[in-house]
Image 1 (cartoon, one colour):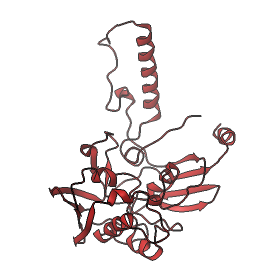
Image 2: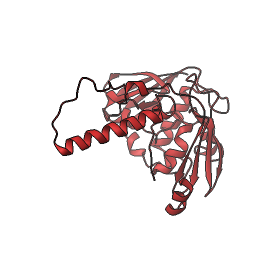
Image 3: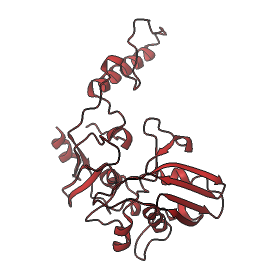
Image 4: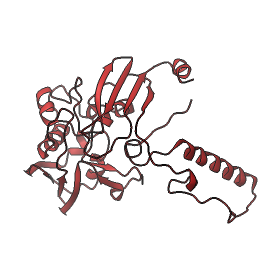
Length: 281
């Protein structure tokens, strides 16, 4: 059984690798490994095919084509549809596509430094001094229910992470420990003040475990609603049948024109490996 993990940038619009290109990589990689194992030591000849930007033969490069639904298996139900309260990939895979973060890791150049972080809900950001970070937010972003995204939503989410309501769990509260306050000088600016320099902050909020949910929904329910799952992401929540399937569908109001390419995502909950393999076959 082949399992794949696909990052947001690639799956939802960052250059989906066509099947033939993927096969080209497998064949080329296998041949290279075999030659190295045999110790041939021969250099690549000038007649070898040139490689495209994704490592596949240039002739195999294709433009993404819209449409289709990807089906995947989950071994269990997510413990919560509020990703901020979980510590498992099961929730991230099935719910994170409904949301954006303040910033995100560059899926075309994966890395683990601040230089590998790119914009998401924040178009730009700056650090005027060691204890201040300012985010300038995108305008015109809509939630799946038609509501407007503003700086107040970011503040509500960051405040929740630091100190959730009684009875709610925030496993990443420690990432907000040095946050002295979150200010919203205007509807599209967020200023985070720290009690001391916190170089890890930007990388933390770039994680899928830091989605920005609709502020009024969080205030009303004390968490991201498990029946609505309202976000600004490329996919919107369609349905959840416990121990059966979670369905997401393409958001027609996503703020990046033409994205996502897929029509939807389905996550079938199949605990038994043998059953999942039989279904796959």
